[in-house]
Length: 443
Picture 1 (cartoon, one colour):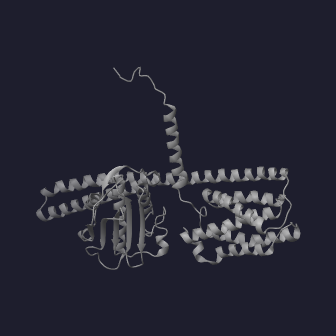
Picture 2 (cartoon, one colour; picture 1 turned 180 degrees about the vertical axis):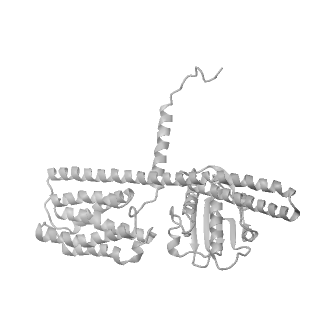
Picture 3 (tube, one colour; picture 1 turned 90 degrees about the vertical axis):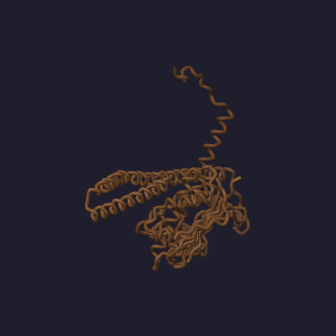
């Protein structure tokens, strides 16, 4: 008899309900607030950035003419308008600001420019014009523009800080104006609160939509990679059939068939390994932290032994040096994938160099420094400049435009950060690269 029949269903206790809700809230905050990339400009492209610069540089002088001459407002400073216009021109004249995706410096400059020209400037003008209808409407429109322009996290912090700084500066340096009536304050707060709330909701929903699109893209990549296993299985069977037919052929033909079957088997093994890597990389947005104790030296040895090197020369280029073994917590499967990705990238860099690989061209070192485990991947490949180093951990950015999809290093960073570790790179063009992984030691 089924033991579940007649079993009494026990409702969860209030404490269990609270713990479950708290866990879901923490997961939501981690997935939606902390982990996603914060984009200074949504959907950045050279033409979008130039359009923003053009509208800023031309719009401010135009509105000065409107609000100072055609429909005069109480406060309309020419010097401040010109400053905003100059900030817009900077987006047009500096080539580094139109590169996509933007570098860290460019992202910081974008954020600063639009913080000044949007929340700070509009709040300053609102206060200096005594909250009149023109600037009430303008400030409300600013919230919608700001949330549509940049990530909702940046827009939320920028709006609050911009208005606060503008209010402090208005109290210290602004024109001497009578206080607003209670009715005006209440009316303006309702209007601005509505505009801010709608901007926040639209920005948050837009972020969720982009996240779902990314999940769909990654899922499609994983499905496509998985489907490749079917023709590979057929190739494996053909290789075995060729090997079985070899003994019935003359000696020289049998040896050729045996070599052909071996090469086909190695090719299938290599392709299956690459498919495993792509499927794991496609889970970028759903990386589980894992809590198993991992021995670093064993992880590295197994990863090197199982890596499908294309030649004995490529295998000989990899040298493992264990200065001091250590243990850390994480997912063995995911960290094996991390090591595979870092080895693959290093070997690709070596293959692109002008000289043939030599033993030790990829040195993998394992040790402990300042009570943290450290794994260092040092290669003598083509290296990269500072601009690329700032962007290589971004999803879909790849230094190998021909075959790279730009998910491997983003996946590595997600897995390592999930184990409370860090990964960084140091490199120079034509002088190789050093990837350093640091992890907390297991108890």
